[in-house]
Amino acid sequence: MTSIDGQPAVTLAGGSEMPLLGFGTWQARGSSCYDAVVAALQAGYRHIDTATMYANEAEVGRALRDSGVPRSEVFITTKLPPDRAGHESSTLRASLHGLGVDAIDLWLIHWPPAGRRSVSVWREFIAARDAGLTKAIGVSNYSAAQMDELDKETGQRPEVNQIRWSPALHDPAVHQQHRKRGIVLEGYSPFKTTNLNDPTLTGIAEAHGVTAAQVVLRWHIQHEIVAIPKSVTPHRIRVNADIFGFTLTTEQMTQIDALGHTH
Image (cartoon, rainbow, N blue to C red):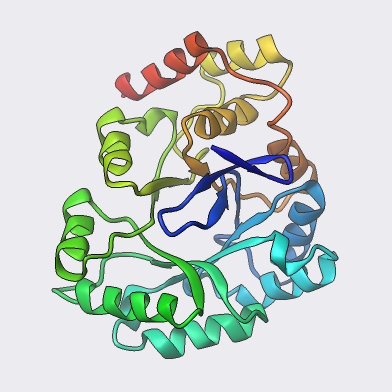
């Protein structure tokens, strides 16, 4: 684990530093997306996650420009929808134009495309990285076998796999599959499958004087799993960013891990 501006980060296989806490923008549109991203950057987030499918790249880009935070300090992820297989270059150019940037930090295949098209799409991702249009490349919603196929066919592994993750979905075997391949696990929807009223989480939160949501995010960070909570509420955005003033004990981490075995 490394640090960027005091925030913990993980080094990707290609050398990029990816902040472990990101800000998700799924379902955020128009002015509410713009306002949320500005609030997130003001709250200290330095990693913003969007996607072509979210139809909000222009708002994210405008928020970044208006925030006063230098582009060089913000890690930006966007994603290619599977139905854009065969149109990778034009889709990425549209993303860059919408975001108002020369290059992104991470480009993901949002879902495995139908049929056997993953490998051909992945070759285009490698080309985009080699052309300097994205610093890192990865996938989302892929299995270990699907990632191994990309590696076998191209000699290039994804640097990141973004999948649904939370204490309730904690699976040490899946985490280990990523670690042994040198692929960073990034978790989305950290609260969607979490019961924030679970006594384990509320008890640990009380012990640290924080919220259960903060405990869930801190748990991700200490496992070196990237977390991308989303909210359009300024207060919640600030609270979710404030997770670096406490540390979960080994025992508390184990208690939270165990929530994955109770469902």
